Image 1: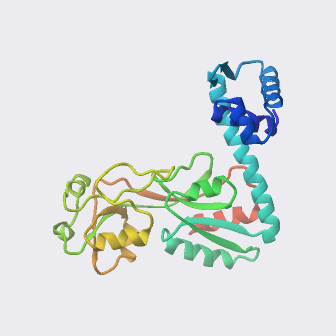
Image 2 (image 1 turned 30 degrees about the vertical axis):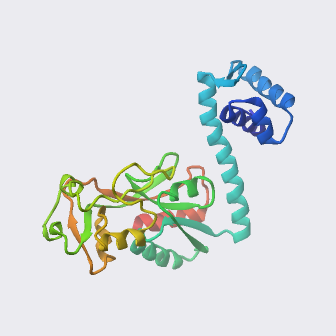
Image 3 (image 1 turned 90 degrees about the horizontal axis):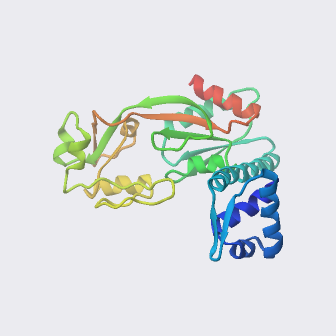
Length: 279
């Protein structure tokens, strides 16, 4: 299959209509239809069921849509990384969530800079849940991710650190003086609803707590007594005087991982990963 054919097929499958797909691709409908028919002949199967209102995917078409998106994304990521590497003279880009893993990253950058063959490292700070997509689409070479929150599918990874979690509360709240808490105790506070985090698509589940867009906003809202949350225990080093942290005994531990594309053959990336695992 050719990437051009995959682009055509993905457009038709997503639009569910040849006319709309042709408009999206900036081409006439007849050559688009012929290209899809040629793809089906080459594969020896039917990908689309045509009807008067448009098209629907067969089971095989559903598979090709999923795989085709991934293949197109990989090609675009390869092109982006190639251009970026040429422009940077061989440097690497590390993406991490803003205000997360700060101490680890500081040590890692300092240690890596001391290597005799170290290259320039650009740090890309992103929002909640944006590290994996940034690595996946080629804007970064390495990412610091966190399980169970981030999607690590399709990456090679090494676990760097695992830690328990704590509740972050207003300093004057009755729960703030406890030695430990459970998730049920935290979520049952009517005066202190849990903060709501976006999913991978940027959507928020319904609930009484505020929508969180960044770490600084979260801590300020907790200090004002508007919300609470559960975070890795390393947050204790950065909390303000108006906040308190209490261990949550039944919260799932959080692991910090370093991730990179499995097809990567960069010596600079390999050395950076090696230093991270040694730390």
